[in-house]
Amino acid sequence: MGSMFKNPSGDYAGRLIEAAGLKGTRAGEAAANPVAAALLDTVERRSLARHLLSELVDGRSFDLYDDPMPTLAVLEAYVDATSGELIRLAASVLARRRSGVVDAATHAGRAYGFTGLLRAFALHASRGQLYLPLDLLGRHGVTRNEAITGNATPGLLAALAELRALARQHLDAARVHLKSVPPEAVPAFLPAAMVPLYLSRMEQFGYDPFRTQIEIPQWRRQWTLWRAARRGI
Image (tube, rainbow, N blue to C red; front, side):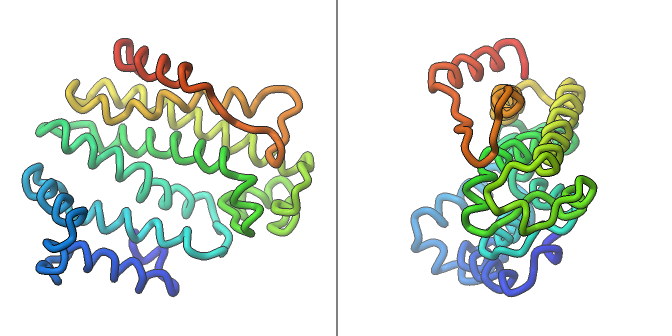
């Protein structure tokens, strides 16, 4: 997983991991930093897998550059290492028993991660960043440059719609796998309950990925999370 995002950013990610003491080095420096010290304390008390934190930092190194996302498989690896790993870590804090967590977190992380990238599409495009995979764009006849020019072409809209459909598929799969997750770990998956709200906004008539604001009122977000906590995602 880690090697997938190396280029120059691999060294940067490695320094962050080392500075936080996740590889057992520079422990004194980590202990002197209150954030790193609290992180290491949580890792020890909850027996968290350090490699998950390392992969999370390494995965985020992709954000530092404007290289395009080459394939859907690489995009899946990216959200697995970011959104998926966060859910797995949160579930590990909440529950000692971790049966079913990995599969549920993978699908929930992909649903949530894809949706977040779709919401931020215009912001990323304005910076020259492209998280829509090139192979997905190619299926709809869209080039990288065309995808970030600010014009919502039919091909680009079709590519975005395909990624939304994949997000929904992963959310459905997460719901199935959640049946095997320990009840005390389920709150870690609550952010995924927001996915349908955001996707529905993007599927409304007249949606323009460069101009439509994908925002949900705070009361609606809180209501959705409260209901999901009581009834399920």
